Length: 451
Image 1 (tube, rainbow, N blue to C red):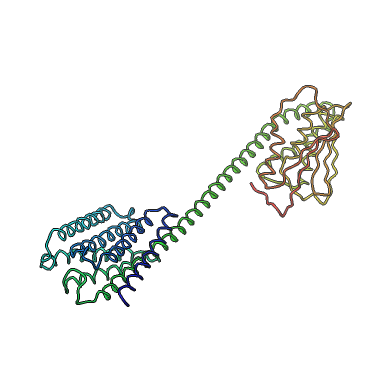
Image 2 (image 1 turned 120 degrees about the horizontal axis):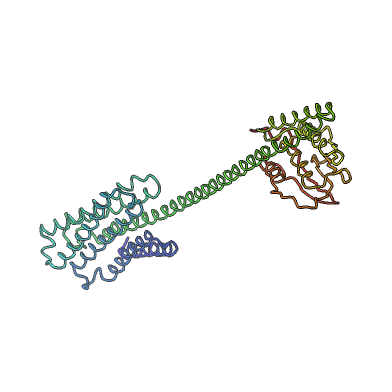
């Protein structure tokens, strides 16, 4: 292959690599892509310079060597910084980071020293023992740094590390070739012992492979970082979802605890207040009708037995709740007489359905509390089921003339209980001068009693 062909191929390959990396840098705007673009730019500038002045009198022997030394020194300095960025040098131990920075400083000083000696000494110095020692040390130092880069990259067993190793090997071979040539032949290039075409094929071919490998290294690095970023984003999203779920669960537990506290507070309020009224009724019955008084005591004991047995239950059967409300209604009926009427029309098919305990007691008590209860205006409470499997609790509206203070805990507790059980929300409507609460009856195979 002729010298012109080699030069054209090298110039075209480096130009293509430069354009591709410049475009990638324009999109990524990262230090890594910027540094490598500068590396390729330096190699491109050297190829242009040598293609124009390499074989003319404009470029002296000292100038040839200075360009060669500066090119490889600057490229090596930039690659050292690339190694630091590619392989997370920030996480290295402090001592390792300090040694790395000292290596970059020593290389900078060596490049400057070699450049000054080349420009200040005469031609005989290049071929003297001192010149060979300085040049040998310089290129040996570059080879050593390439070996260090290979060692660091070898610790990363992924595509980024492997392609960086390949690029570093080509760089090391180029520098080793220059070192051997400098020791066996005379400086400066070109030397007639080895043809200029062969020198170009070896050096420039190695540099093209070197730049290609480093370009692939950056491609794999960007892909690796994109995957890492995607994984981190996914983990962050999952973490946010997990935290949100935990917060929702915490809020739900708080709501459940609030509901339990409200229910227990209601029970605590009902027990002494209801017991006081019941004892007054019992006291009056004992005087006028001992048989009714005995029945009243039986019903009262059943009411409190139910309150105690369902205290720690989240659901109970509709049949149990209806038996309880019949006893509870008997006690209320003793107090209010014909002013209170209760009618129950529940299909036997729904007797084993479930609902929160004391639901009917809260609704009946709510109706008695807010409406007029007297024989001339009886309060009619109806409990019935519909074809959709709902329990309808309704009463005629005859509001008391004086406002009743109410905190709404009774109805809100029922709604919260259904929400706690993950069941449809009860419907509360007022139509045709009737107050209606439509309660979903829970299938026994859907939920299990929980304490």
